Length: 418
Image (tube, rainbow, N blue to C red):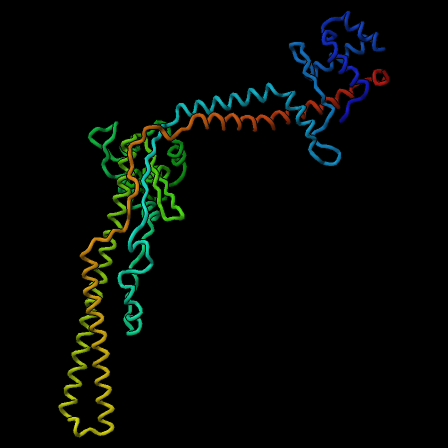
């Protein structure tokens, strides 16, 4: 709400002549010069002090508070907001500095992490959609041979994010700077040591456990896997390149874990692919033996028919039966020959070593820390403090605007006339 002309006049006099607050002689002279009584001016100064518009150090803190943050058109008054920011610049600066100091403190005491990366991309049959028996799929469907599908494809990011791999990493013995003889990550992170302050354990005492007791070792493994989840990241590019980043407190340990991930992926896919090749070979062998038996039976039937019915004595009915037996033998022979060829191919696939994953870059110990980034933390803390200080300053100045209304209403009738 806008101040009255009378109050505006008094505020303007205080801005021009700050000594009227403390010097009675100057206050009397200024009052007479502006057609006011010294008592009125003195009372208004006392009211301003009472409501906090004049600081205790006798310095004027009054600015243009006649502007409201919201205009009559329900729009934000940017001029009033800017005036408030200028008025509260000390408070804003103080909050921003405190937040920056808090960010700096955190960046100093935070755990230092080093980063190592590896890059790989799928190659050979792993990058193709078909399997070992891709050429045989159509033929197998033609002859009704089931359960003969393509070899499975493997998604490398899924393997890296699997619990199986992370559990191996947690339980594997790693040499590091803290434990020269090596230790697993549970011991390295001191998860097996009792914590001095554990709010979760303290709160859990007040809730029933439901007669469910977990193995302490399983709990430690679970907590270690959760912590490891935050330290391993996988990024897959459109080109197919896969980058794995590992964060750890020890640079040598970081590189060892990253290289172990690469070796694990190669070994896992190789073993699974070999297992699938063996499975396919066994399946084709069984189908081949079954086709061989069917071929032998059809040949025996044809031979027995020929013995009983010489071709010189054929009748139309015997010719028809003879043709069916011959076609049956030819079909079984074609299936057997095809399965025999595929069986030889499956044996070759089982014996050879396929290049399924190419390692482009191996991990090396980091030479610089990756986290925390102190400069970035301080800058973000400073900006965050500034963003917090703005609403606080606007809210605190809102009381000043309301107090201006109280001052106007508190004027006596004679003072309002003056």
